[in-house]
Image (cartoon, rainbow, N blue to C red; front, side, top):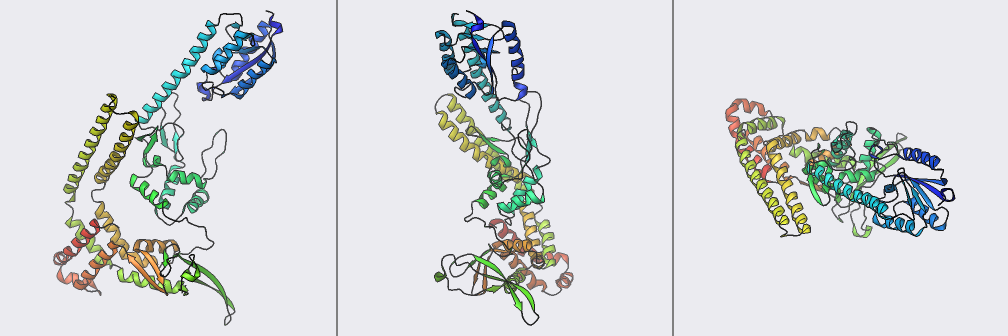
Length: 544
């Protein structure tokens, strides 16, 4: 056979793996093949290159087009660096071998040898089968490696926003670490959402414009501002609470979690609320808080500007009123409540529940004195949760034994294992909370006493965000009807008011310090103890 009469395609391919893991780059392949062409004096009509994996059939458009052109007679030979550059799957290799055997492809040159139509097909079959088996073995090794990585608490793939991948040379040693530039900004996003004072579009605006957030740069694209859909995915991804799913199984991450499981659950609750926040032109402190007492629609606010003829100046007025979204005929409340009137009604309610500073301070001192022994009781609870944890671990081991003995199916095993693991994570989280926060209830109660003592002062600042925060802490089911305000106070606020009223009955509203000095500290604290015990029991047994 005269080599000069065969027209060849030069074909060079690399897979989509990172550059450092390639067998030989495309320029290196072409350099070797060009030397082969010159040495053997081969006739080449075109050079074809592509970056695609050959493990799956028909995944390479350039290769498919080359084979189609060979069938049409444009060429009858291929020059390639190694036979595994042409095929690593049985389907495409079978077609290649058939075309070589029937003479459509007359010659295939590689860097080491030539394959002809007249040759025995055993050698090319053996080499191609080795390439195919290599792909299979590589897939198994990769899957096993990724599974082991998950067991060690390291999720496979590119790190989420707020985290980075390390870049160690040793294969399999890389892990997820905190991104020092972005981690605290993503954490701020969670804090803003948990405050219930910002919706997702507002949080995106804060992160991009106030914190200058930009995504990571890469070789393909520059850093960009955070998009709303990306932030929604972050808020709903358990990765940030220290857990991740891989192939249907839940794994605990060994990287630094950004939020606790409790915070993650609260975020899901906030995102799952009915209705979507809507952008508005003006910002009002009390919108999104109240509903109409007649029809149940939301109370909104309007800002009007009016010319005052007496002074020939313009004045702005804010009114709160029903949106009447269910229809004007269903709502008979035609009243408009001014901002001044509404603030006065709220302030009156707050004053009735405000805790005097002396009673706050004395209460904190007595509570610390009375319940410093809680650590022992807390340890009992910790021991109980540890027992539950050990029981669940044994149940998971039993499931594994049942799967190994083929008593249950793989599907049933994964279903039950995921169920047990989810329960185990909750128990472990509870154990962690008990260990790190043995006096959490006391801290929470101290914070509530501080809120009650400063609630009017905070409201009087006139800052919209602080006023809304005060209202959210004070009560729920705010209703406005006929210019009258109705509020269901939180039960812990009612309990603090009961404590406050009891203390006032003993020490008086005016100058309670004088009565305290008259009775003496021990006697005064003795009188406060039953009041604080009732308050403590109420706070610990009632939800917020």
